[in-house]
Length: 497
Ligand SMILES: Cc1cc2nc3c(=O)[nH]c(=O)nc-3n(C[C@H](O)[C@H](O)[C@H](O)COP(=O)(O)OP(=O)(O)OC[C@H]3O[C@@H](n4cnc5c(N)ncnc54)[C@H](O)[C@@H]3O)c2cc1C
Image 1 (cartoon, protein in one colour):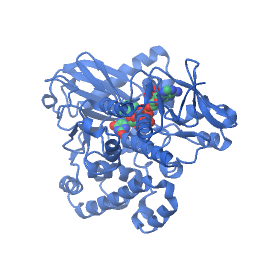
Image 2: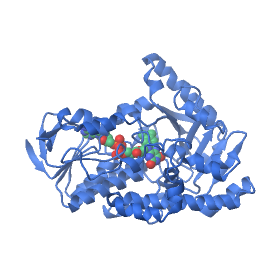
Image 3: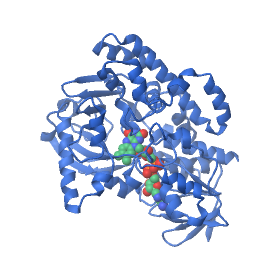
C-alpha cells in the first residue's frame, strides 16, 4: 500500500468537501478522492454558448442569519470568499386560472399576503405558522443533538406541538386548520424541496424547510453552487489537504472486518484506518465493500428503503432580460391544478408535466447570464422508472416532448419565452443517474416520507463497519444545508473521539 492518511474521504460532493475541510483543518491528514474532474457533485455549473448554467441550487437557506450552515462555512473560512444575493420573496406559486400568490420570506408578511388573497384566515394562519416555526426550530436543534437522544426525549416532552403534530403528514395538519384548498396549496408549495407531496411529507420536515427560509431568508450565490464547492475545496487545500480528481474509489479495503484503506480505479491501494464515504450508501455497502464485511442488518435496512425522486430539467439561456419576459420572482412554482394526485401521477409518468419549479437567476443578476439576457431552469420532479423503460430512440423523443410540456406550463407566467430561446439543454433522471452515479437519479437520496424520515435513521456515530462513516444525501435529509452541516458535525465528533 502507498502513503498512509489519517482519513480518506470518497467523493467531493458538498458533503465530502465539508467533511474533508473539517477533518484537515482539525489536524487529520486527509485524502479526498473524486471520480469527476471538478469538485461539487450536484453543486456545480456547466457552460453552453454565452451562458453558465447552475446545475442544482434553486435557493440556499441558512445564510441570512445565525444558523448551522453559516457557522460551518465560517469555521472553514469559506464564508468570506462567497457573495450572496437575497431573493425578494420566498416564492410565487401559480395554478393557472385558479391562483397566483407571491409569498414574502417573513412570517407576518406571509399571514398578511395569504389573508389578503383569502380573507378570514388571519387568526388560523398566525397560529399555524407559529406551530410551524416551533416545530421547525425544534427539528433544527434536535438534528444537532441526535447523539444525545435521551436528553432530546425529555426536551420533546416539554413541547406539546412537536409531539402532537410533528409526525403527522403536513396535509393532515393543514386539513385541521383550513377549509379553503387554495390556502392549503399556497402553504404547501415547498413540497418539492424534499421531494414528498404534502400528504406524504411529515409536518416536521416541511416545518424545517419553511423555518430555514423564513428565519434565514432565501439566497442565490454569485457564481452559483460551483463557487460554494470551490470555496470549500480551497479551504481544504489551504489547510494542507490532498485532493485527487478523475480518481474513483473502487474498493474499501478491510482486515478482519475493519477498514484498512481504499483501492483506487488505477489499482493503487492507499492506507487509512478511517474512511468517510460521500458515495451513495447503496454503492458503498453493495459495491465497494466485501459482502462478508457488511452486517446482515445493514443489507436488510437497505432493502427496506425506496429510491427517492429525481427530476427532469430544462436549462434555458434566454436572449431577453427577465423583466421583459414577465418574470418577477426568482422562484416560481407552477402546477396544473389543485389536486396533488395529478402531481403524484405526473411524477411517475411521461405525460405532459403537471408541475414545475421555474427558477430565474437574473431577477437580481448573479452573473450567470450576460447583460440583457437571462437564465431560467425548469424542474419537474420525476421518478426514474418511466425513463428507464424507454428505448434509445424513444428516450430522445421523450426528452423533447417532456421539455415542450414544461414550456407550455411556463406560458402562464412568461408567455414569450419560446421566442427568445438561445440555448436549451435537457436533463432527465437518467442524466443525473449517469453523471452523479446516484441510484435512480435520486436528488435527495432515499424516499423520505412520513413513515421513513431522518428521525428514524440518522445514527451517524455508530459505524456498521468499524472505521467507515457515511455522509451526504443517502444518510440524511438531503439538500444543501443538510449535506454540508451533517457532514461537518459528524467529522467534528470524529475529531473529538
Ligand atoms: C438537479 C438538482 C436540483 C437540486 N435542487 C436543490 C435545491 O434547490 N436545494 C437543495 O437544497 N438541494 C437541491 N438538490 C439536492 C442537492 O444538490 C443534494 O442534496 C446535494 O448536492 C448532495 O450532496 P452530496 O455531497 O451528498 O452528493 P453528490 O453531490 O452526489 O456528490 C457525491 C460525489 O461523490 C462522487 N463519487 C461517488 N462515488 C465515488 C467513488 N466511488 N469514488 C470517487 N468519487 C465518487 C460523485 O462523483 C460526486 O461528486 C438538487 C439536486 C439536483 C441533482
